[in-house]
Length: 266
Image (cartoon, rainbow, N blue to C red; front, top):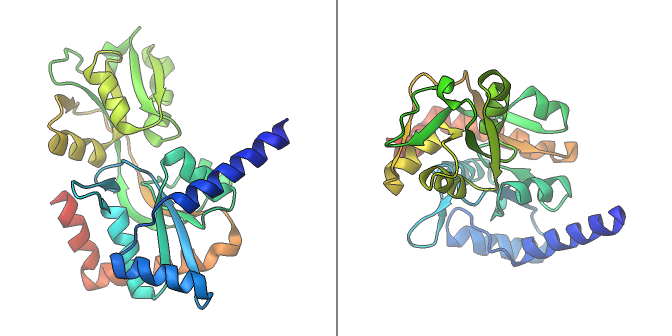
């Protein structure tokens, strides 16, 4: 039965990737991807991503898939001269696609951790340093971890925000509810189903500002943080990591990296 379920999952992922519209660095690149893929002249690297992790990846008002991660891949691909097709699949589906060999790499605000390395993730150099913090409703009387005893907090499955909450759970006596995406997690706090959520600080800051959410990030609740990294799950794709690292170094040197960060974070 497990074998049958695995085969069904792989088939579903393959159909999803085939049906999902790829977003690259402009329409011309997407057309080139299609042409090169059909002709077999040049490899098109399939890169999986999350759906909503603002400001790193999200869909804008015009329906375009945008964000820091999206722009970084575009700039690095241009610098290194490779073709790519970025797929907005969602965190869990993106991981599954990479692990099943349906995608070549992952960029989705993924923190570089020893645990992930030990489980088979192969990371690039870090491209953005971030922390995780706790957020509550704007009118909440919760001021810190000490006020969470007996209450329930929200986290996004498989993230460093979830890991951070799990590391504090027993010490402060709170419960955890897991969600598949950030917007649903935020609504749980806004709706009172949970009293707080744990999220990456820049993502939470951008979501509150751009979404005009009645939430507030609590001071003195941040952890030490980790850098985000681009990841592969198959050593045969080391070439993609090497190009990412080389391109990242170049765009940091020529100022393009700073332009991208400033565009989304000011």
